[in-house]
Length: 86
Image (cartoon, rainbow, N blue to C red; front, side, top):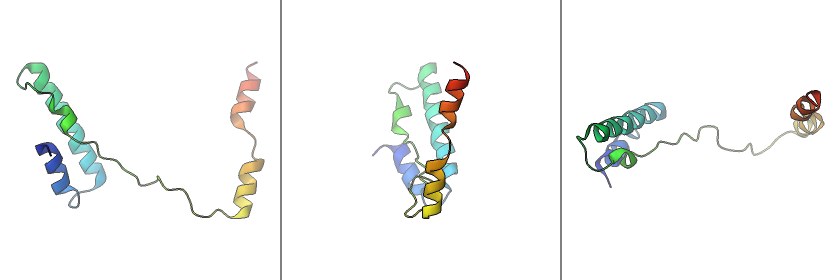
């Protein structure tokens, strides 16, 4: 495991996801800067892992029947926009 990845893993539980995301983005930018200036031979930007925020990635387990019906009956706004510009 690379040192940047070890750093991220060590701080995973002590800081917020947004803070880890910002830190890893800053590390990648700094590594790219050093590479561009010729101060760093290997490209270490890829060694700083990307932090994934899965806060809203789950599908609701249950939708009430009324909500499902409302969604199915709702007009397709994209179709209406396309037809308006024909």
